Length: 151
Image (tube, rainbow, N blue to C red; front, top):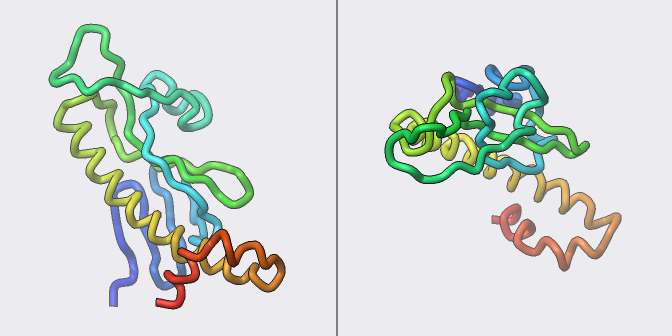
């Protein structure tokens, strides 16, 4: 039985409940530490020179490449419970807004983000429910989470 979901940039081990980042902040991280995931674009000239995703590109939706357009890398910025960040680079080479490479990388980033969002829903909701005993206010804040766990 195969218990690994594999992408070029990240592996998800469903048996051990961990993800291994292969391109970005390399390492193995437990599902239970993830609290947020965002798709972001990093300006190409900063990749590898500073902390990942500190220079975000909010580029346009141009068809074709314009003179002076900035290249970027598509990736995922993941926030952990302790407030630190992880980076997963989806793009292997810099891409430009509207080209086929950018569209392909966005599609893969969305697939991975959807998987991570499901992981967050499962483990964060479980964590919040465990806190019900300590803090009754969670009952009112997280009714959605309770429904997800019970179902």
